[in-house]
Image (tube, rainbow, N blue to C red; front, side, top):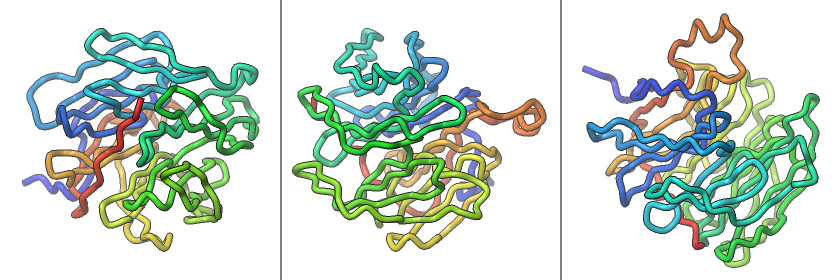
Amino acid sequence: MIDESKPRLILDCRNNLGESIVWDELSARLWWANIHEGEIWSWDPEGTDSPKTWSLGVRICALGLSSGDRLIVALEKGFARFDPSIGRLEPIAEVEQDLPTTRLNDGRVDPAGRFICGGMDEAAPQKALSSLYALDGKGQPRHLLGDISCTNSLCWSPDGATMYFADMPKGTIEAFDYDTVSGAMKNRRVFADLSGEPGLPDGSTVDADGYLWNAQWGGDKLVRYAPSGAVDLEVAMPVSNPTCLCFGGRNLDTLFITSAWFGLDDAASAGQPHAGGLFALKPGARGQLEHRYAG
């Protein structure tokens, strides 16, 4: 009998950098990005069909649900809509055109239907050059926060009153009081401090009980944090670079996790034959439905 409480490989997709996974309850499908390959993936994990993949010729950095089966997408330097029925991107707005070393990185739709998305600097050494933006339903990006090296961990508490965010190199997950009507952020504070941990905070999601689940890049694990920020549970992963996670399945009780082989040297890659795969487990918690972009 399979122990579903432990991570198991469910799709050996070998994504270079799998990211931004979301569950669409209307189509009962997962959607995620393979960033550096410029791909969007979609799959019904409870069905028999093979995954669908769209190669779009530009890096797909983050995505969120929109109306029908359309997606809102963060490209390297802006935002676009994606219609899978025609396999085409419709550009909406550009950002950071004057910053050649940055790209957008992590995004999620907020409770009011805005796409909140931030960027990262890809130069070495990495600098705090990028920003966090809110894309409203009219397609107008608004600057929220600056001096960011690498945006990650965007998600919200069940009541929408707390927004979580990480500037990855800092090794902390931060929290803000969040006004869902105006989108205003205030009372910035450290929610979880990963100093002394082997990894850094990558993608996060919040379950129905308000506990935050984080994929720890380079840490070989997932960590569940209580609403107080205390570590509640750690789940060992068979790969060193889990990247993002979401609850899905018809009962929202399965945790799906993307991963990456990007950044692994030859020895590490040889020791992790399923790096870049899609994993799943049933952790004994249920998730929340993803919000949908209002544009």
